[in-house]
Structure formats: C-alpha cells, structure tokens
Image 1 (tube, one colour):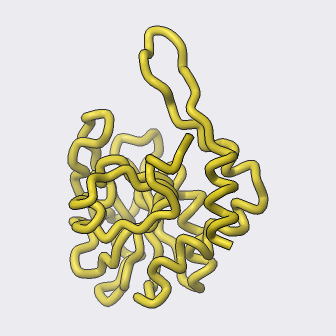
Image 2: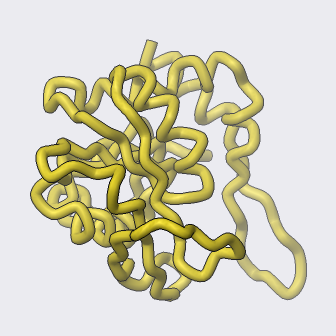
Image 3: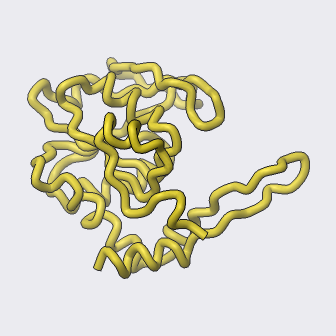
Length: 179
C-alpha cells in the first residue's frame, strides 16, 4: 500500500505561484487532505516507521501536524499532544514546557511548547509533521522532549542526509520525489 500511497501523494501535490512580489513557488498540499484514500493511509504508513519502537504518545506542531498527529496516534493506539507556537492568538492557561526552534526554512526563530501535564517522564514520544525542510521543528521538539524523543515521521523530508540521520527522520517522500 505504501507504493500506492506514495503515488497518490505525488499526483495530489502541486507547486503554485503566489504571484508578485514573490519570485518562488509554494507547496500546495491541499490535494492530500481532499483524497480520502490518502487520509486513510497516512496514519498507518507514518506509524509503521516507528511502530517497533513502541511510542506511547505522538506530538505534532501546529498547524498541519494537528491533522496528521491524531491519524498516526490512532494507528498506534496512543494519545496525541499538540505542540503550540508561541505568540499565537490564543492563550493557554496551563503550565507549558517551551523550547526554541532554530531558524526555520524562512530564517525565523520560533518557540514550540506543550502542556506540561500531558507528558510523563517515561513517555516514548514520536514527533509527526507533514514536511521537514531544515529539521528545525524536529530539533526544537527533540530538545524539549529530551530522552523521550524517538524520532520524527513526515510525509516529505528535504533535509540534508546528516540532519535526517541526526534527528531520526523517516519519510514517505523526499523533495526529489515531487514534481
């Protein structure tokens, strides 16, 4: 099924031009969320990368991670914890654990945080996201999670091989797989 899923992901993906003044293309992943076969297959496919490591919880950064994380958590039979970006428009009135995220693909430094009470000291945490360009979010979450961090499962990995290995990133596609 993973070969079929990979083919579907490639067919449903496109690059779009946001128009002036931009001089670059933007990834359009909306076709992934529209295809029920992709939605059905993503959770199990991403979970399978780390199933033998027996994660006890999935953590995902907002925004797209909030869609993917629960699909993977459900496939693994574990819970899900949101990783919020600091400065969002909503206040979280619970104690949080925060970590700085190194500069991302846009060169911006962010902070990601999770609710302190939702992570146990003995949790085995799988990070899930849709795309890894630099590994910045995975690196920030690894710092936040410490020894609880197992690795990161993504749909697309564009990181340099050394970063992929360092952060234990596993993916369904690489940037070279996309049209």
